[in-house]
Amino acid sequence: MKKENCRVASALMLLYNIVVFVIYILASVPLLARMIRKKGSLHRFFDRLGFYPRKITSKINSTSQQRIWIHAVSLGETQVALKLMKEFKRQDPSMVFIISVTTWTAWEMASQVIQNNPESPDVLVLYPMDSACVVRRAIRRLKPSAIVVVETEIWPNFIYNASRLGIPLYLTNARMSDSSVRGYYRSKFFFGHIFRCISHVYAQSAQDAERFWKAGVPKECISVGNSFKFDMPDRNTDKEKELREWIGEGEILLGGSIWPEEECVLLKAFNKLKPYHPDLKLVLVPRHATNTAEIVRHVRSSRLAYCLRSSGEKPEPGTDIFICDTMGELTSLYSVATVVFVGKTLCEHGGQNMIEACAFGKPVIVGPYTENFRQVMNILLQDNALVQIPAADAGELEDSVCNGIIRLFDEPMAAVEMGHRAEMVVQTNVGSVTDCVKDIICRLS
Image (cartoon, rainbow, N blue to C red; front, side, top):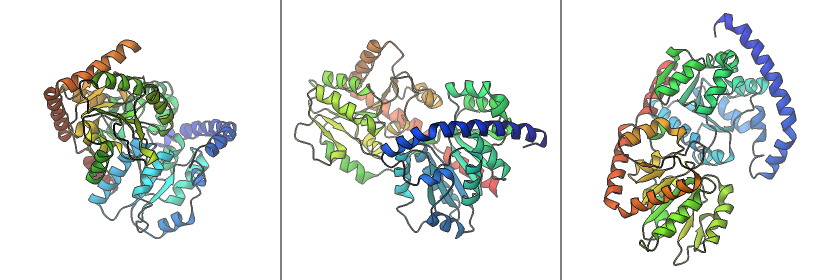
C-alpha cells in the first residue's frame, strides 16, 4: 500500500475494529448458544481465536517449505480449494498447505482429504474471526508464504493485516454478486483501501473484473478467466456403481442441491411422468441436510414409497423416491441421472452449480435465478446446452418447470444431443485452475 494511503487506511481500520468489537460482544451469547445446539460447531472452537492445537503448530514448525494458506467458506468453495491444492502440488510438489474453512460441512469434506492422511504435512483449520488481534495472531502462528482466497470472501482485517505483514494475498475464482457490488460501491471510501491490499484478483468474467476495478482493485492487478468449476474433480466409479445399485434400474429424475419447496415441483413433475415412464425414479438431494425433514414431510404427503440414504436401510421393492441426505455423493449421482434439475434456481438466491451435471453430458434444466453463474450460463445458453425456464409468477413457473422436465423425457434424442453439447462446452472451458496456479507460482518465485 502506498504511504499516502496508510494513515487513512489505519484510521478507517481502527473505526472498523471498534464496530467489530461491539458486534462480537453483542452477538457472543446467541452465537455460543447456537454453536452448542448445532452438532460439531464447538469442535476446534479456539481456531476461531487464532489458537491452534499443538499438533498443528508442530507440523507447521517442522517444515521450512513454502506454505500456502487456501481459504474457502462452505462446501462448494472447499471443492474449489481442494482442486487448487491438488494443482499446486502437481506443479510444485514441495509446497505445503493450510486449508481453512468456515462451515461444518466444509470441514467434513476437507478433513476426508487432509486429516485422514496423518503423514501429510498439510493442515486443516477453522477460519479466524475478523478481529485485528485474532487475524494477526493466526497469520503469525500459521506462517503462510502466501494466502489464496476462494471466490467472494472479503474480510477487511484479514486482507489488510496480510498486506501489513508482507504476505501476498490472491483472490481466485472471484466474482462480485449484484447485491454485494452495490454495497462495495457505496462504501468505496473504506473498501477501496481494502481492495488495494489484494495482490491479484483472478476474476471469473469480464463483468466481475470490471466490478472489482470499480470497487478499488488496480486494473493491472486483475486477470480474467473462466469459472474454476469447469475443472471437474476425478470421477469415483466405485461410488457411481454403489449409487446405481442403491437406486436400482430405470430412468432417474434428479434434483441436485435443491432448496425448500423445490421438491414440490419435482414431485409434481414425477407424478405426471410416472404413468408413461413406469420405471422412473425420483432422487432428491437437499442443499442442506437440515432441509431433509421438510422434504420427507412432502414426500409422505404424496403417499409415495421413499428411502432415506442416511438411514443405511436397503430400499424396499417398488420404492419411487430416493432422498440422498449424505455428503459428497451428488457428483456421482449426476453420472447415473437421466435428467437433472439444478436447485436454488426457483428462488431468488442465485443458483447452484450446474457445471457438474453438464460435464457428465446430462440434459439439465434450471429455473430463472442463476446469478451466481451468470458467465457460465451465458456460455451454456449460447450453445443451447441446457434449458432455462424464464421468470414468472409462482404457479406459472412451477408449471413451466414441470413441462420442461416432461419434454426432456418425452424427447430423449433431443435431450441426449443437448447433453452432448453441454459436455463439449465444459471440456472446451477447462484449464482456468491450471493457468491461475501457474501464474501464482510465477509471482511467488
